Image (cartoon, rainbow, N blue to C red):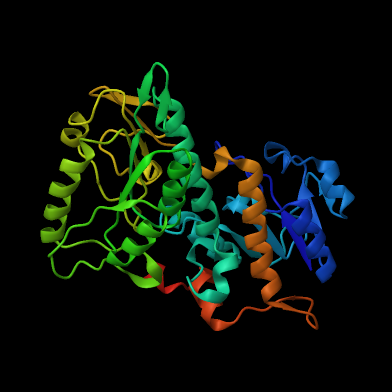
Length: 371
């Protein structure tokens, strides 16, 4: 069983899909591991560190591979030489890169999309969306703090008092919760909102103020796997009115709302931006999926009405060392959980296998892509 670790080709991608720690563990399972030369350099991991734990470092790591690991899905031409039926295990962006999924099927590969991992208890340690979103929420607050022309905490000095910044987190998933915690640690007055009413207690547990629409029926907002769903027109109208009045008083806004397989929902309009104080900062964590904020542009600081709007196309890649360490453990936890010692390879069960498998036997087989 040969596992190949690819060097990422996507623009701006600085992460790597295996660390020396996980390579060593794969080898302990009985696998051989080939790492493409330079795969870890942008994540501060040298080729020598991989060699030291027993990996082969080569320019042609994929040759003879049974499993190919990546952060983002490789193009099919990068997989030349992999064994027939080889597993491609990575974040594959199945909805955004459907043509590539079809190409995997045509080439006979079994593509496993890690972002389709079901949100069940036993799969928590395999969940790349959670591990990477956690870091993204943290980084979003740090970037906003850096762009903000004032201090976050209240400061009482002989020259007078500096008021605490007011930070508003929109969307309280993994990224939003970490953003709340980080903004609180920096000393801001933090409030947060979400379409899922169950998050109110989570917001309060972190010491933030929940901002929720009240007395509008049928707005639980909880979709399959804990993801948010689209809201009714009645709720959207009430939410817009509430947010508009609240956002005008904020110094920092972090938006985190995403719906799997769809464009990011619009949370902040140009008119709402215009009500904010000059010098305020909005970080749009969904900018790569169309953006929660009107006028946001990936990897650029846009100034509208005196408000700075920023968002990265790949926020976790801004913290490549830690993001790679967590991503690598997600992949190892996944493969090792299904490792069959007698067969010397992982054998998936139906619950997780059917959820993440995109292609098999030359066909696209995932129900989410066939519906």
